Length: 359
Image (cartoon, rainbow, N blue to C red; front, side, top):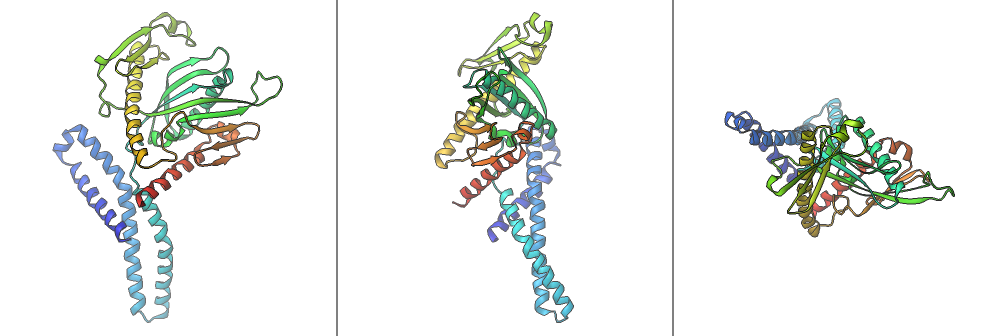
């Protein structure tokens, strides 16, 4: 408990210090520093509020116990006992909350995200499932009040998409979606299957934190830009002009295409954002692999070739293989009701981090 208090007191002093700094005219004039300190202040505020509540419980417990030692009036003694009992119940709950708040946050968690869906094994059925999962996510985004914009899409010859990518804006998006990266497997009877046999198909989902210029400096001298006419849906205009953009990062060979907007300038902006984010993610993956060598992680972002989830339509179930969690509400899940699964994954990661902190 003393160790916990020491950590909280140190955070409280830093919170007060940062609060003074963000009112300093010299710091306000340095926009990069001001933005970083403002973010730190917001991050520390919740911990500081919890620290004050915890300290209040400890102080009240101490005074109630002291009253019980000296008080002779039966009614006052009973009141003190009731307060001690109530505070003793609240104290462990708040301690658990504090332990979770003290877990080091992933600095990428508050960023916007780029979501990429690609058909894998299963042919036409995989393309249809890309569209189903795309719909699932967009319904979830609507529920969360997040905005999304499609950057690139490639339609299948029949139904669905070979791939589709989009940018999502809102509060704490990457931290909420990062566990979705990996292979999503679907087991169901395809529309084209006349014998009623269950087929297994798969798609890959990649969630990238949207990198800002301050996160990753992209040297445009290393990038080759090509323009071409967009293909697929979009009406006559989209096929008449060379509005589509293809960027190739020469040192790494990473290629990004963006063709869903009518404006070449808008497509270029989106393509640069996606390219920067992919290169930033590659650097993050390298760092994560180094960390994983020290401590194997269960649910964190990692190997995107790993099968993470199965959607079984005949049984109406979804199973996340990383935490062995199965839910039997497939219909609601595919309509965007995915928060319970995301919360379970976040809890598993927090438990893992807490274990790591103790070891």
